[in-house]
Amino acid sequence: MPQSFGVRPAAKMHADEVHVDVPLVRRLLERQFPKWADLPIEPVVPRGTDNALFRLGDEMVARLPRRERTVVTLEKERAWLPRIAPSLPVAVPRPLEDGVPGDGYPFPWAIYTWLEGETASAERIGDRGAFARDLGEFVAVLQGIDPTDGPPPGEHNFFRGEPLVRRDAATRAAIPSLEARIDTEAVTAAWEEALQAPEWERPPVWIHGDLDSRNLLVQDGRLSAVIDFGSLGVGDPACDAMVAWKVLTADTRDIFRSVLSIDDPTWARGRGWALSQALGAMSYYTLETNAVLVLEAERWLAAVVADVARS
Image (cartoon, rainbow, N blue to C red; front, side, top):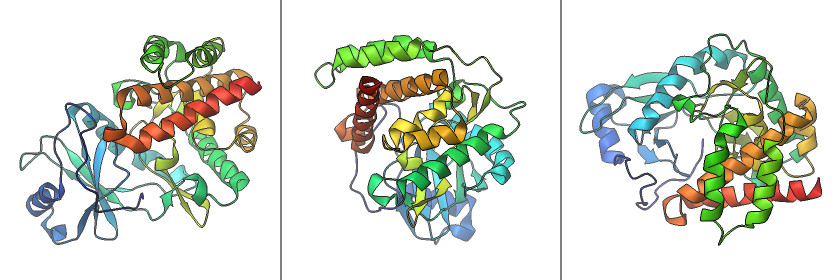
């Protein structure tokens, strides 16, 4: 999992988030899981936007929702991840224990297995073509799992996988708010092009919902694990196609697309998803609250606009 510890106190990412720190995690362990209470506890960075993460010893990680809204994402993940994990071609976190509110912390929380690896930043990916192929194969397997009774887009996954047009109002509102930082005409044109693509009319498929470099782990330059299934659900596969602009390079996107046999409308919607996600992150977070995500989102947006210009 993401590796870098001992960070200085950072600004809150959300106005309604609760304070979580090492002493609190220690108290929760002492009361609820005393067998692990003496393990070293280290905060994990980059910081999770939905959950505060703390490594427990060498083999576990605690995930504590930062605010009430994200409790449902953790509960949904805990219910569904064990069901789909056996089918997946790479490692995913395994839930170990359910924590309950206590010691001033108001939400359910959980302990998972720790997965070794580093976030899939550009400099850590070895053979980029092989990485794009591995990523496509992961998504293909996920989409092939029986979606019966899977949760459709909703509050539990921030509506990932919903029809793209439902994101129109929020996306258009974000564009003028960022006029000092972006080419509003180019971004608007790219968004409108994505909206012109026909919507997904076939049965919904499983989506991870949040594939970006922080949720993809590599070892020896190859994809080794996928983490954070809080946005898991069943919906439009274009939502996971957006990883092509979030993580992959222009010369490897076609490899990913070929593995999944993505049609033109789904590809266009995927590009729209990447644009919408970038604008949402850039307008909500700041360099003080979440510099890693803001800088990533700027890169996603630039990749989308450049791709549209080439097409």
